[in-house]
Image 1 (cartoon, helix red, strand yellow):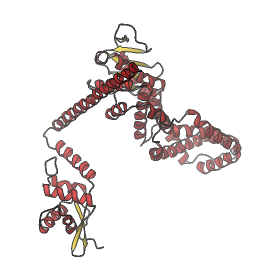
Image 2 (tube, one colour):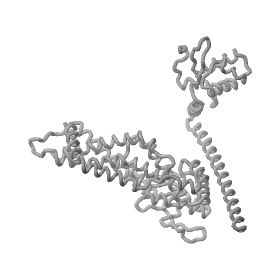
Image 3 (cartoon, rainbow over the protein chains, first blue to last red):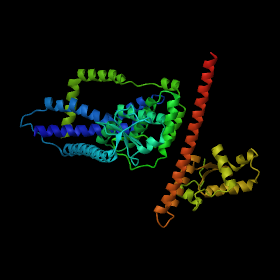
Image 4 (tube, rainbow over the protein chains, first blue to last red):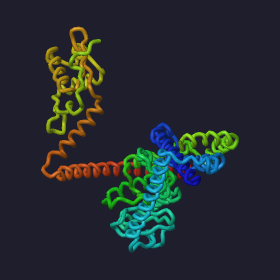
Length: 318
Length: 161
């Protein structure tokens, strides 16, 4: 009974924290999107915001709720309190949420695997214009009817370039377009998309689409190192946009041509090194000081926080 | 300030009944001119609209036309002394957005087979896309030329040095 109550309370807390943070993020993410910041940093920030609810709920549940129950809840049979209807219902919701997240991930992966297997039929390592194998690894030339240029998978990511794309693009355009896709590979964007599938919440679609846009622009920025590259990438984008669209891409795939083509091309045509370098970068180590501060605070106030958590737990169970 | 009986809520849909079956607002040139003027003023009485002398029509003509716009639901009016002060009900962007929505709704509801108007829409969008791609292609070509010229100039400078 003790273990059952502990699980119910933990799951109740988990779902409440998840919903609270998700609502907060869904409402507040727009003003938090910084202007004049490098797109890679914007993408990182938006990804961080998107996964904040699930991270916060896991951390708080395992760092505070479970220990508070273990340490402060009496284990004797006489004091066995039973579980209220509300915590049971909320724990059920939490289990449903987790199961739904897992189902979405498995479904997305299965679909991706099926589609990619179809796209990979008859694919061969990509050769450059002079017949030598192109310098990028994990790059395959697929049949003409497959998507023009796509990064697929997350465990063993591969870039698929269709025969039509190879025929349509010049060598320079193809190289820079491949660099763009490989930047997505480096950023593990497909894995990030799969993580989004695991933590669904209404109202997160716009945040995900903003992240997707920032990730595209970040890959553009990383691939381009001079105005000539920028023009080649813009040309590749426009050329590939003229190809007929194929069936919708699965979750674990990042296509080269996306919806906001006009903005990307205009941005590339006005590319200049100075303004790109001037943009503020939010480095990963920026999160270390607040994390250390939060950890120290949590360590110092751990006892009182556990007591408060337990009091809330008691209130919830009743 | 006393609100006239005319200041009642007219929904967007009623406001756009003026468009009939056409995709363009059925406003006459003079009605459009007055609406533009009211957008630039924010709000105005008939006398204020005539004050700058750009409108040559008679006071009564302007009054009748403004009244017609009000009855079409495009203006809100407030009594001000013996006259009315007119304010546009919608911003130009709102008007454009709802006009477009209304046109699409009418288009989709017009055919016997609902897929047919939708295919017209897809066709129109595709041709728009093709036009956009052509424009972007032109921009790219222009940029390529610019870069080549810059490169040539730099080469010349290098040679001179």
